[in-house]
Amino acid sequence: MNPALHAEALALLRRFYGYDSFRPGQAEIISAVASGRDAVALMPTGGGKSLCYQLPALLSDGVCVVVSPLIALMDDQVSALLANGIPAAAVHSNRPEAEVREALEQARLGRVKLLYTSPERFVADLPAWSRSLPIRIVAIDEAHCISQWGHDFRPVYTELASVKASLPAVPVIALTATADRLTRDDMVRLLRLRDPFTWIGSFDRPNISIEVSPDPGKARRVARVRELVRKYPDDSGIVYCLSRAKAEAMTAALQAAGVSVVCYHAGMPAAAREQAQRAFINGDVSVVCATVAFGMGIDKSNIRWVVHNNMPANIESYYQEIGRAGRDGLPAEAVMFHSVGDVITLRGFIDDSDSSRRGINTEKLNRMQAFADAAVCRRRMLLSYFNEEKVRDCGNCDVCRSAPLRFDATVAVQKAVSAVLRTGCGVGAYMLRDILRGAQRHDIRMRGYDRIRTFGAGSDMSAPEWNYYISQMIQLGLLDVAYDDNNRLRPTPYGMRVVRGEERVMLAKYTDRPLAAPAPKRQSAAASRHDTDALLARLKAVRKAEAARIKMPPYLIFSDASLADMALRRPRTLEDFRLVSGAGEVKTARWGKMFLQAIAEFERGALL
Ligand code: ADP
Ligand code: ZN
Image 1: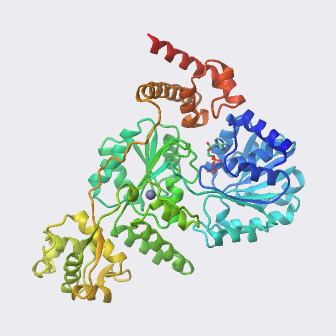
Image 2: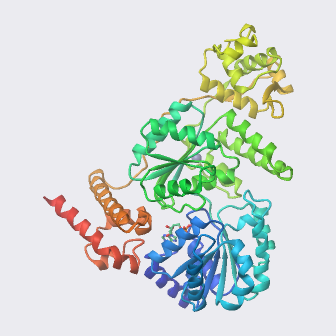
């Protein structure tokens, strides 16, 4: 970037956002866009994409139009900008017409720097806006939605091709947190970008610890969530489930266990959904238990953990969902449970989906399964999926922490395959498990399966163990699932060779993983850390009270990262306060005194 521009951009960063330096890629992208070049910004969630068009907007004399697919996301971004003293507005179907007219008038005068809108609205109003508004930049958020290859195709995005025709001289910046090479190429081609500056940021989110485990049963899943809630009492988390019914059942189970939780899924009335989302964002409840319908618009920095109660449909979704945790860069945790049942449900979704997408979706599900069963560093596997090389094990995933033990499972496989044969290939995974365990199930007796020779032959292993092994048998291709025939199992030729004793099989050993993940490392000495933690808790309380008073989500006042920095620095004057990360001009003027006072009181209390 040329030095004068760089200095100006840094001054704006300091003044409006209270940050000292750019994150990787930001300066380069800002420089390209500010000098009129198209750009593609591929950065992980939390990587800092918004600044890549917001700062060029501040450097320009006009307006940046930001196309965003979700209303909640737009409103959140606008609130964040306004809190930093940057004029912004959103134009979408949920805004009263008078407000929209006012926003457009302010934009016409160049007084609104960032104008957020939906793709539908933008495409419809482009002819008028291109004449009446001083548009200097167009930013397309979630740009992967334009590609059929992506996992989140939205047809209206393809109409954004008209932007370049209507505004040939205006740089367009396409942003996304998820795109493989094909999707990337589609973005450039379909948006008609000209020689775009392309930044592909690292997808690595080393602060998120990753844990994947075969389904340990409902009680332990609930216990795991409770444990996370206790470990991070001031923060929040998301529990993702595969279906509305599962989300409701898990919500009830968590409530029964005393967890403060709301349910969220697309089948709820809009008002209830809205209310649940607000309760979560404002910190009134600490957990939301939801389907994938939840989260795209959530820009909450203190989500400390994400639990996948079921396996997601593809790695893109999984990575995006766990990426909602730890956006402030502080340690966060991702926990996923998976079972044969999930795979069967997901196959069912695929069978019901549009025939043109079945092949792609099946392939994506296979990759997801391979990830769940991986015996290599999970982060390496994820990053390699996104074509990013990582030469070292991460040390922050369950595989790195304890490599799975493999054992000769030939006998277990023989028992399972022969049980399948003796039922005449008439059972699914769960009934197979119960037959092997010799469970007293009415339907087993009805069908006479309690009289076959393998009934109870696997009673030495627990139900979760059998779930885990049967799912590996399916994934390794020893058993095949007839998805078109009630998910009945049948042995493959490979399975038959094992049952005849011609081949041996190794499986990953089920371990009853210890419930607690290792505590995140911190450097400071225990005593002063204790003190800093106490101050941090105090600052969070101040933030919470203020948020309630002015009816604003707490993280829009200061993020957790800002409060942590504040607790470490302990500023005494407003001048010191400006050095706190995230304390821009406007926030310092508005809240500096309040937090300085809390720090001073805390220090007096500590002296007594
Ligand atoms: P993305 O849109 O890529 O998911 P955001 O733009 O929302 O990410 O940024 C994530 C968080 O990082 C926000 O809280 C933002 O204020 C913060 N952030 C962005 N750029 C910087 C920076 N240069 N220094 C410190 N924090 C930053
Ligand atoms: Zn690892």
